Length: 317
Image (cartoon, rainbow, N blue to C red; front, side):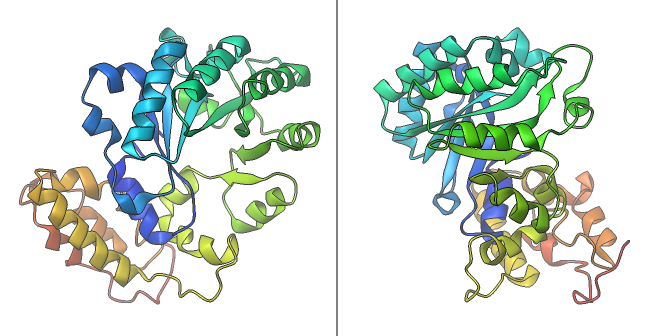
């Protein structure tokens, strides 16, 4: 979710659900240790529970970042062993780390020694066209011995050569049965499934086989469906579902506070454009919040202009 799940996106998603676990973008360990740590690590207290997702492979650097994450207040730290981009590969982390389970295990041990924060791992079910189940089974087995109790498994192989990151999200076939088999083979480990999940019926079916479901693009592109999660996934049926109007009022207040701290409005609104996805007349609202000239005013109350009149009239645009 590089360039997607920044703090403004996560704050928006937290308004929609109080219970889902939110992840940061993948942050390179060197960006934290040698860059602008505040830019990469700051978050609003409302975002809890929140996971810092790290890109890195050197145990000592991962350990230092785990301690920083703990001090910053993160609830969990996740090592990304699933990103297939060439840029990530050149840094010797991401999906290519699945070739080095012992190195990942060493990183986990170092992180657990340095901090008390939960350490989890996100990975694929295989690399390139190797569909040998033993490969991913042995990866989890080795890393779990280092103390990891939470794995998030993208149910596709990662092709390290020949496919772009976007193509890697669509072309390698989904094999949910592999993730389910992993759960049967590792009953004491928390296994979450990721990849291609776009409706609550599928979420419910997966939760009968594994412990959790990670969703990315569906909730980003159709964010208001996330407002159903607390009732449909977490069983909180007695709590009223948030309304778009209420969320919008909270976003205005949030945007104003961020503008006062020097954050341009355009940095925030790009994540909120789909709040009215599927609502008749939403195109005009989106257009004004995508217009660089309009956004130059840094006026949070732009969010309240050109709101679709009939929020009850849902239709395809």
